[in-house]
Length: 162
Image (cartoon, rainbow, N blue to C red):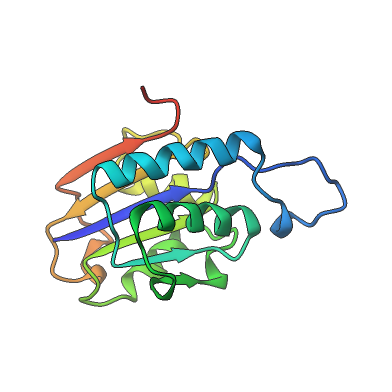
């Protein structure tokens, strides 16, 4: 079994127009939301074997907060340049390159590519709000097999879920 967690970064700030898109930090709501989602993941005892993250500040901060809440070690966080503003096809390619190991992977990235990839696996999910986490479980021996696989289980959570 392979479990994939696709996470859209938390809400970012547009307060400083001088900042580049990559450097935008989380705003207050984003920090609150990522704390909420981190607690939910910890309560469910979610702990990915590896956490991949876009290098953008808002994605990296989201990943760091979630990793801390789940007890993911810093050595198990990998920043991947290709995840920044990547289309769904590129996100899937990063995942499929993992081979047989690890078994549980979390990927923190951006829209619209993230929502496109989520919809590829679960057409009933039409949107990934900020800080949403889509969880997919696949009955597959290798990540390379998930491209056209139908997930055995799908869970979507986001900060506004009660």
